[in-house]
Image 1 (spheres, rainbow, N blue to C red):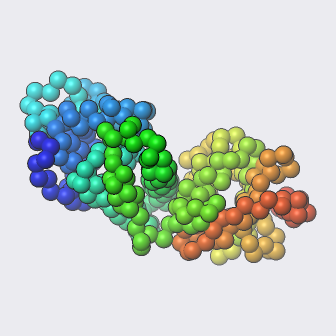
Image 2 (image 1 turned 90 degrees about the horizontal axis):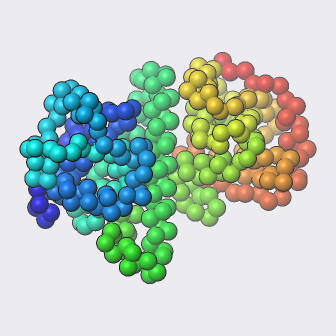
Length: 347
């Protein structure tokens, strides 16, 4: 298919038919992505090669082995005879792009069609996330936890990508010559808008920036060097999901009275099994806390304290904010008392 040829906007059903499971990833193949975006495969891959730094690592893209290709052709009835760019006689095995790789493609491919197709992809992934949430009671507990983790990671990646695009746009006047072969300022504006859904309630204010709850909490936790204390009476599975990307080796203590019993022992055990490198302790809050706090590296020179407007289990579900309190000294008596509390037992 030559560039410029009219291409139909990809539908959710058509997209699902082009998603394969390989090496534990959900992936799409280069020639089918090229078809969606209206490129010949060789020109599509040339765009990727020209921006190779954006696709480093198997978690973004990888080339199929002969065995993987044979298995795919056998199980999925997939054919490589699609489009002029791939042809009937394939010299090289196709590249597979993970979800993160597909998000990165959205910053590389330019033009009106690329913007429209990218929006269709974004909406499809959002619908997949909504389906998981709406049908969580129908999904086996362990599967739900795994899906929740992956969904949180995908949302955070999209938000980080949007932030990166915003930074590029602010510097456009200085780097326009470097970007001229990749994307225009107009394309960037359209792409940023395509990531924003007015009905999406997963956003909050953090450090005077409007961003997703997943990204905000991840950025806060990532700053910890030794310990993370979370004081939150209303906890749930989402509380654990937000903590899964805390730095390795950091000790986490969750202080809560688990009001309403939203977090259950099976969820906590499955989380610990899924992420054995995370060191977490549950302690009672003692019934005296209404506000929510995140305390990083208590008792060290790196100590920082953040005030959270909503419970972590509801992160992004209501208009709220996370604000750093630089007067950490006044919390010492309260935190020392918390550390003496007994362990929390989940039902």
